[in-house]
Image 1 (cartoon, rainbow, N blue to C red):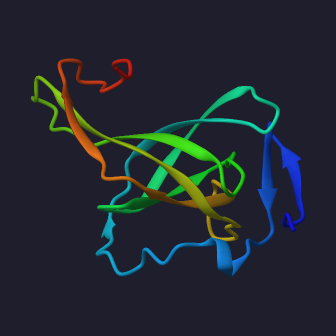
Image 2 (spheres, helix red, strand yellow):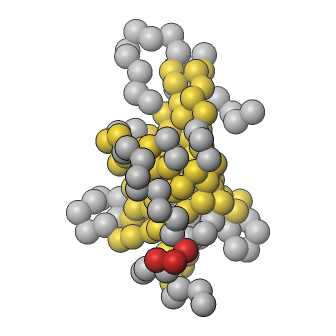
Length: 138
């Protein structure tokens, strides 16, 4: 049975997700990190979507992101987390991960309004020549 949800900003938001469908990834250490996150996924209508937000925390196998738009639970997603770099650095670093959205929730204490958790395969750390860290995905 699919959880009930509603659509806004081109994404479906779920009030809750089935506990049976959420893998237990909480045994990993979470690192609090507020960094810019860009993410993309393919909606149920087959259209590729992009959005941005900020990380709340990351681990070796996932992340929690605060954003105004969230992918639906179960969506395959690609995240790029840009690490802050010192002003005099000639490059920046970013963490890329592919995973699945395992939870979305309404955040009453955040300007972003929504948050979602991603369980991922091991992330890849990349350095970029561009300080913005926005170079295209290989």
